[in-house]
Image (cartoon, rainbow over all chains, first blue to last red; front, side, top):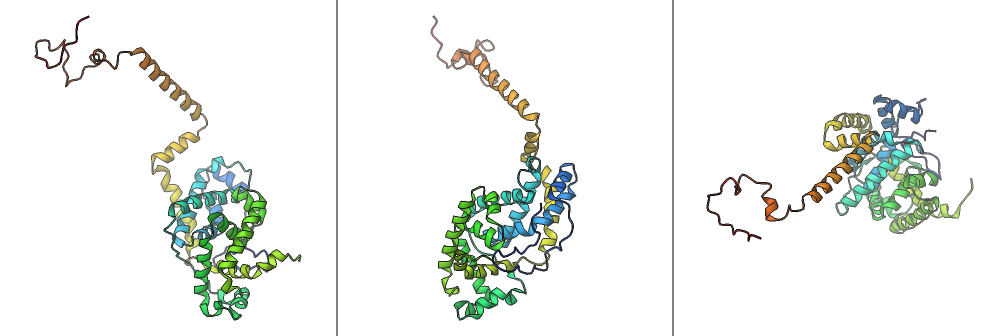
Length: 217
Length: 120
């Protein structure tokens, strides 16, 4: 079964956010496995359909891991090229999208090891609807530093806090809190058990909460 | 909906993290990305020996053939080493004359600075 297609991940604890303008409208697409078979049979254009299906989620994850648009764009492209090359080795034991996610995550973790100190942010703009988002209106309408900071400063603080997390913790927060993936799927992607995912998520939330306490009062 | 105290503790944090969902790449980025990926796929197969080697290694019959060839090569080198026991002594060197070092048979009358080996 294919995962949900929306770019903006459903919030596990609140109502789903509206999709940004770039998100494709849902349509009756062929299953991933059928597309994979078509690609293996020599129809490369079917791979483009798979890319279009998952590019936003993969990019979103890599962007939140790197806090840099150019790095995320390059890594997303590399991920799909690598996936195409390795498609023959895809045995279908997991879903295609878990498999691609795994390639993306491994590639990104290697990249981040090499990048180490060169971690500067190149953040994307907030979409036009951000200021109207009910959660954010509620957040910045209270008497907190967030109200004075404005959204872009808040965005920077948030990304800086994310970058302070270790890569595995940042990945868990990205996949669960931002992408909306369930613990079980994250465990599959990270090739660890669900308990590890839960404990990493708990620790990461605690850390973020401490670092962002001024904005959470 | 079931209410978990753990979730309640982090509710504000989750709301704050929701801001990250609103960060969007430049317009048309996603419209162009799949095209870039496909161009990269078309371009890179001829790009280097690595992809050529990858493809060769992915062919199922190639791996046993490669392993066999490697075994033959290693075996051949071992046999060569065993059957050439004097290859490291000066007499052995004479078996492989070079152009720069004329051998005694081709230049017997030429004066030599080499010390002759004692006759046994």
